[in-house]
Length: 442
Image 1 (cartoon, rainbow, N blue to C red):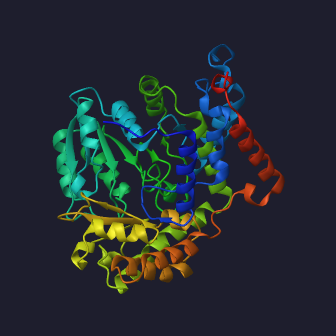
Image 2 (cartoon, rainbow, N blue to C red):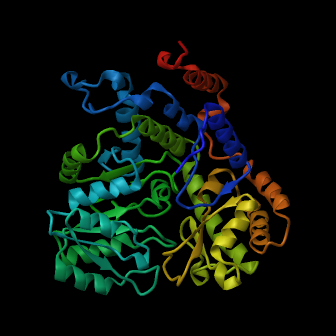
């Protein structure tokens, strides 16, 4: 199979075209978010190239010295902020992604090969990969079930736990409108199988947890929690694990040494910047707005004739909405195509709990981060509905979307501090001017 030759000119053209398009687009994919320009800065700099293994700053362990001047940005910024906002005593920032964090948690806490782990059935929103990853690690898998896609059957959970005595209950919600009641589940686990650990994968809820908008799993009694940092939290594509238990922390550190080498120090520093912005520049307000905007947008779409799941329960307790566009006569892929032409990006997918076929999954997390407010939601709902029905020219709708896209958003000090902004721009310009001699013409 032949491929076209792509030159550096082509690369810059494609990137420029994408940036121009992105600047006019509202991304409503619930598993994605944006972050500030300042938080992106480390990805351009020397730190992107460096290993970092010496968390304890031992003089005889600087085998990789390139990160020696950067240690405080992981150990004095990112880790303490995660401990503070996550209400944890111990944190690891080694995982590279949500799936990598899942693998680390299962490998650490799931027991020896042949042990049993219990996780959420995909029909109730559990992640598609959890059973496969667990089985590849030699673990047996049983499922928590529910009366409907949004609730667990706690009586079934108690019976299951008493019967199989799992090493771990891994609570994961990949598709989620309402959070699992972790406190109630922990009570069931402690009564039915006291030696079983409980880990909560809060990837989709992470920003809401750090803001205190939904309960912290550690406060609810879980032994550990974690997940990716780019869904409801506006950070880099990375992941973390948090706990208050020293033995769990020790076991995680032992396991991660054999599963993760480079943990992408630049992304860890980006995460620290995003956490600092989140704590000091409106993170809690943003998280509350995400939940409020999601409920409101669900109602507005429903009022305009779109079938929105869980209308009887207020549509959502987080950032996601599920739309049954097929029930309204529009196939989910066609719905996605029409919305994309109008400058709105959504998911269409199989596997949404309660759907016989595909559904449309949308999120208000990134639009809220971009500055969409409650006052903007009727206009967004109008554009969204007209696009779904193909009831107005797509280019006109795309112009309306672009006007919604260009709003003030969650602030960071660099945005209003001219000297700081100038320094950041100098660093970025220096990185772009850097060109290794090996690539210079002879």
